[in-house]
Structure formats: structure tokens, C-alpha cells
Image (tube, rainbow, N blue to C red; front, side):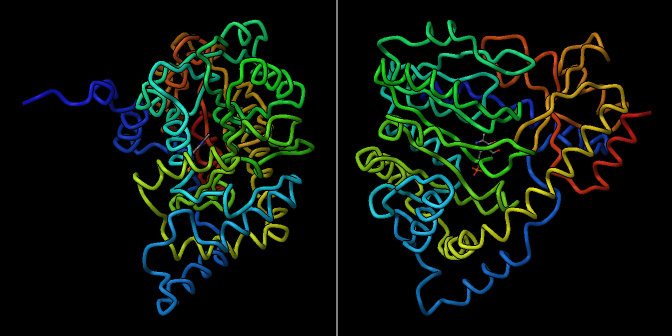
Length: 385
Ligand SMILES: Cc1ncc(COP(=O)(O)O)c(C=O)c1O
């Protein structure tokens, strides 16, 4: 039989799938998987149940391919309210199946074969796969520990006449870093100089700790017109299974993204879109308790890890923490991750899989603290033995 897609042949089962299997086999507590082990808020789930009963309004049929208008309007209102950003729900906002589809559709809409795409490593793994599917060339820039800053010279050198797109994720998975105003300005200057687009992945936009603030790059002077802002409700509402995401971008970019979306998934689960539209209207009431919940979990986990003799890097946002391992082992991240699964019954993620150039990831493990208090407590007890 004829060969299959060469690009797809290059995709292997990820180390995460292998480790998850190992975690299950060893009955380890899984702090690797990046989602909560508890349910999302009951009031939002109730909104979905109510939406399902509105069959006479055709909510159980295909949704408009751009997303239902109440949801696009709610998204638009929130960008105005929280960031003073104007996006027209008619022409600039598109609802897709989670940020993952937003990433895929944006990259496919912009990147031609041979175009270069700058990504900061460690990176969220779907970026690389989508760039490759589009025939683009990933150009990595390594974030330097412990602050996870870029080296401005390395970043400048990464740009070329072929640079089409830069991908920034802030708050950043897996490091928990929030890129500063200065850093975004440095990047913005280069984007304008080289006439490149910015895909800004902001799925952790509301998961920020203490005094830290999330400021979308599109709010910076001259960046909105070249920025595709991506977010989703998975992290904000602790409902990663609902897969409602969106893109906000100028009209011509939105048109191209919609064309990819139209011929890929076409539209998104309609009743859930209605529930999310209502939930987004209630963010002011919801956010304080949401932030307090995760702040408590972060502080508890960091404190516990310190008691176990680790020196975790305090995340400014997200529900991940990078923990240096060199003081505990001579093994690299994958080996040490396996060892902890076997001997301490705790699973994490080895971040070297999020790099294509640098070696830095081998010196860390990523832990996810979006877990029940008792899950975190048991994991810490195991690690302290
Ligand atoms: C940085 C980042 N972007 C995108 C996603 C995917 O989001 P969604 O579940 O909405 O597809 C994730 C999920 O872990 C993520 O960490």
C-alpha cells in the first residue's frame, strides 16, 4: 500500500501517554496530567443541563459555524471589561473546539510551507505538531532558568525574512511565568520590524497569583492588528472536557481562521456554548473564589515541596510548577520521573519533551497542583518518605 503522510509518520506516541500508563500500572498519584481531579462549578453544569432542554429552539442542532451570537457577544464584552480591548463579535471572534483547535486553525490559516514560526521552549506540544502539519519550520528560542527569560540576542537572531509567526503563551505552561510588559514590548518591536504575526495563547489568563497581572499583548500599541488572541474556558472554569475556545483577531485574519475551522470541525457543541455564554456574564462573582482556590493549592504545594527538600520555582500563574531535580538525583528528567513513579508512587511530567533545542528541561519535573487537597497531601507524604 502507498505510504501515509510523512509528517504524520513523524508523530510518535508522546512520553506523556507512556508515563500515564506507567503511573496507572504503579497506582501512582498523578500530578502529571494538566487538569483538575475535581468537578467544575455546579452552577455552570446546571446551566448546561438547562440549555439541553431548549430543543424547541434548535439548540441541539448544528450551531452557526462562527459560534452562537450570545457567546461571541459575551466574549466581546469580557475583553472590553477586563482589558479594554474591542473585538467585533460579528467579524472578529470565532468559537472553536478548545484552544487546541484555535491553535491549529490559526497556524493553518497563516503559515505556508517554508515559513518560519518562532516558538519559545519549553512549549505547549500542539504548537509543534500544527506548525509541521502546515509545512512550517519551527524556530526555537530557549527560555533561560530560573526566571525563564529569553536572551534578547537569541530572539533577535531567530527572526529572518522568512519569519511569519511568533507564538507566545502567557501565563506560560509549563513554567508558570507571566511575560512582563517590557518583554512583550521587546517582542512587539521585533514583530513590527519583521512584519510578523503574533499568536497569543492566553488559556491561563485568569489563573494568576498574588499581585501578578495578565495583560494581553494585543493591548500594546501597534500589536492588535497583527495579533491573534486565543483563550478557552477549560482552565478558567475547571471544565477541560467542554472544549470551548475562541480566537479574537482583525477581520481578515478571522476570515482565514474561519475558513480552516469551517472545513475542519465546522461548528462547536451548541448547548454548551449557550451555557458558557451565561457563565461568562458571571465572571465577576466567580473569579475571586476561583483565584483563592488555586492560590491556596499553589501555596500548599510549594510549601510541601520545600519541606521535602526541593526548591520549586514559584509560578506567577497557571497550575503548574517546575521543580529542579539536580539536588536529588544524577538522573535526567525522564529517568527521575520513572523513579518517582516506581518508588514514591507520584507521577509528574518530564519537561525535556517540550524542548527541541535546549537541554534545560532535563533538570526539572513539572507538577500540576490542580488536584483535590487530599490528592496533594498524599503526594507530598509519599515524596517526603
Ligand atoms: C498552553 C496551553 N494552550 C492550549 C491548551 C489547550 O486548551 P483547550 O483544552 O482549550 O484545547 C492547553 C491545555 O493544557 C495549554 O496548556
